[in-house]
Length: 583
Ligand code: ADP
Image (cartoon, rainbow, N blue to C red; front, side, top):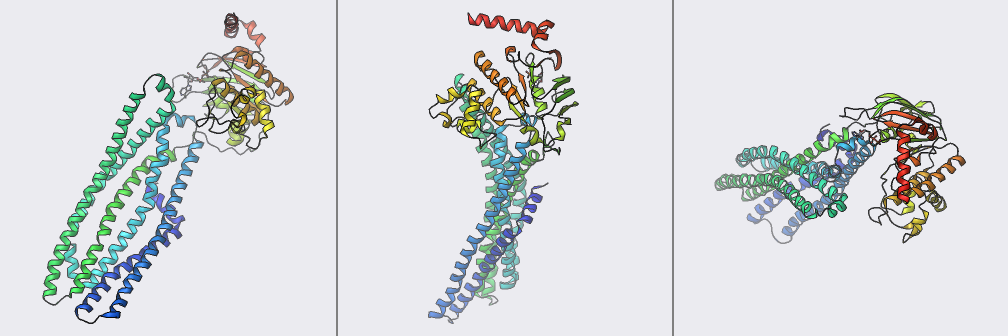
């Protein structure tokens, strides 16, 4: 879809607002076009001595009254048109936001956050202006041109009009020369603004690391260079725009000179009245607006086109995961993985290679193995963040793809190693999936996640603000808040992806015990625990050891110890490490 098609579709849906603006603008143009004729007639009447006293005042009152009407119409079209243009911007932003929220991790791996933020702000602003100001100026400029030219030809003198238009091709050439340059300059300017945004976003996200490494000055210098580049490229776009304006000035001055020469000659020979020549000069002055409007529209449209070229690929990027499933309920049953394989794009080796396992309702599965073995990938496939390339994942007898994505994700509580805390109170952060939860429920899950006491020590307890605008919690506290959040969601499947890595062993054991008690009380919930600490999975009903994406050992803790494989040796090593730590 081109920018014009996009704007046309929008104008089609909001034709009433655009039609009302167009009517008011046409009204203004017609009124303005009549004023020079009236003034011309008044001058001629004055010269002929036909107008004096109160009659003159009455004649002058008409243009003044028209001025008041023009003022009202100007306010009216602005209100109508800008309301429509803001609506356009809002619709585009909402569309972009919805697409972004449906994209998966693979998309975000290719995109930079700063770039996406620039699209949502700067680029959409540019498109909004192309649909608002540019449409208006384009319409107003062309109707003014048509009406004023008609008044010049039929209302005054066609010979004068012909002479006055002689220098205009010069302006057209300037317009043509500037147009392509303005497009390239605006595209460059938008790209550079994106780069600047990326830098700011990364710097703010990594501000602690930069400070710790003493890199603030280097980062500030990089920022200054990027800001200079962005300013220089915006200036370059403006410079091309500015190059067009003198061409307008020169053209109109030449027109005025030619008009006065021929006009003077005609007046001298009695073929034209002084009033008509005055009207013509005023009309010529009115052509300044269409000439400038052409340059302005050109710049706005080229900027909008450059922005749309950047935005469109993001909007049309296919969603990594299709949401074509129809099942709207998910009754907990066996979760079965059958010969599931997955290779990340561009990777030579499979992250998961023919993995088969079954998780029954109410059971706990421990997933262990060295870093890079494929544990997180397995959880991401269950969450449908990625789609397996072969094999099937079925839950309660249905392939995961058969469920609506939202239903599947609601049925799973996933706690990654690094959970995000939003800028809200700690109670709101826990109640993220259940905003109506009572304070008693929130406190209950916080106790189960062994974080209640920590929260009570905060300045305002559960009402303490956390996240970017609040206090910073320690890694272990954040992980426990995330577990409380997952427990409150009360989903039939809980996925803990190294979610207790920053919690000490004693607290971890306490949380796992709570989880086990809870599972016994509500027998339906299954849990998958991914952990580097084998003690976290020792009580699981089944433990699976992954290596290079394949299951290499599987069984209960006792079975695996007896197998004397990776699990048994790792267990002994970790036990030894723990006893040394205790000394
Ligand atoms: P684990 O959770 O066991 O540490 P992962 O599932 O994260 O392992 O990773 C399995 C393999 O897939 C590793 O070789 C890792 O390098 C690779 N991998 C993980 N995430 C990505 C990614 N986003 N893009 C490419 N390769 C990845």
